[in-house]
Length: 196
Image (cartoon, rainbow, N blue to C red; front, side):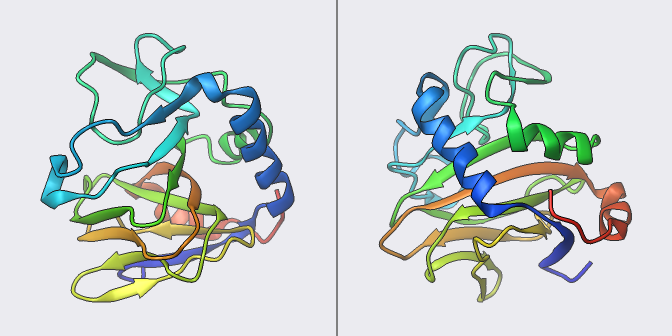
């Protein structure tokens, strides 16, 4: 894998993805989580004020409770299971990538910052921008920055190396993302070009 990221061959119908997000906002607002903690909590002083999202899969016992994708809940964890937010295009992605889990949508408002950190070595993440701007960056040490376009591309992110995000723009950055086992990387790269 390129040290930081790779664009996968399959693509998403961006209009269908945006309609999915609109449905989350309008029909599933009860499942939206919001960062309510101290801005400086977590690794290295992240700036999470205003960060929100939806768990399409949850590892909480109660699947009717909002579940953030970040490790900020103190509740007992279970295996990841589908919430009522796993429908439509998200369900298609789950069927296409049956080895994937922890499907989520996150909204990073202007100013949101997740400092450099490493996730587990066992997983990589696939990110699909729904809404973005020219200053919504994926960052990698020491000073590499990437803007992922909201055009239906799926990007495999190497989260086993120091990485972060920073929305320096004036509009929200909204991504659908999920984890895949690192040992499935080559399988992911063999998928053919198609639009889901």
